[in-house]
Length: 396
Ligand SMILES: *Cc1c(COP(=O)(O)O)cnc(C)c1O
Image: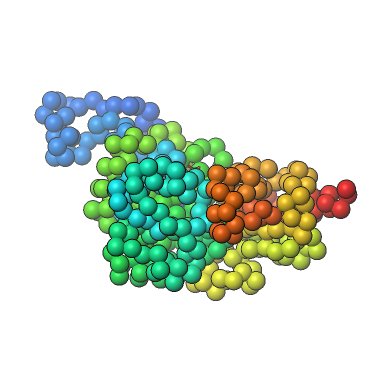
């Protein structure tokens, strides 16, 4: 169903859904690898583009298309490209937009493997990457070279919670003919719409907020314009990192409650952040909804809410953090984020372990940094759990 003229909550439920001959209320799982042509001519027409019939699931599939169209409407984009994982979305975009001799500028604090794949893999194909703190726009301008093709940002950044001004990046990107790519995983389109702020491409690990139930891994890319869409879709199909129909079914189910989940999680998050900020054992905390966040005003302007991700450090450093992580019981000690359950993890030794110590420190990923993803449990229980964990630090 086209819901372009409808509100966001209506889009969550109905965008991308289509009627089938049985009147299914949900989009069924088309668990098939291939599709029968009506005739040899029909097969030829599907391949030449004269007919838009389905051919083969790596190229396109009805369940996957429903999700792709759903997310495209949520992001106010042209269309979506669903992938097997968030990393597949990232590598597909790089594969489509970069080539030997080209240069990419990226936020320095980004998802660990998103940095790793540029440093360790694309570098082997003579793609050069510069990592800067993109929350300071002048750093981006200084890094631009004649061969710079892509400006890649993550905001809020993982795990430092630094915020980059998307509209300002878009202005620079247009002036220098760069393609602006935004990893919107930490926000989801409910909290931030990068394409509306001038980005060319937005991508997600749908493993996180969009699916929201810690039961599948997946990714998606949405572009603003058709030409870029075709280029990136081509790379996805040729690299073969398509989403599976069952993944698409699961995320179509998960996304329906995105707004409700985020509203509850961020309602909890501000209370958790205030608790941590006032706790004597906490040295620092970064949450965009606290006035103490250096970019609180930008967050307020650019985001439609402050989300449920935060990072903090304890006075006792990593050792104290380790004790806390070993003594919380409700919060799962696990990587990933944005699910209904509260998660706690230590980026320096876990999600960002592959980033060198020097680069971690330069990007602000200190050893004491603990990342916390607030779920939708009762907030009193989340705070009690943290309080008990923090008390364990004193009990030597
Ligand atoms: C998890 C994550 C990714 C990678 O996604 P996968 O689904 O795990 O491949 C990319 N970016 C951000 C911000 C993430 O949190």
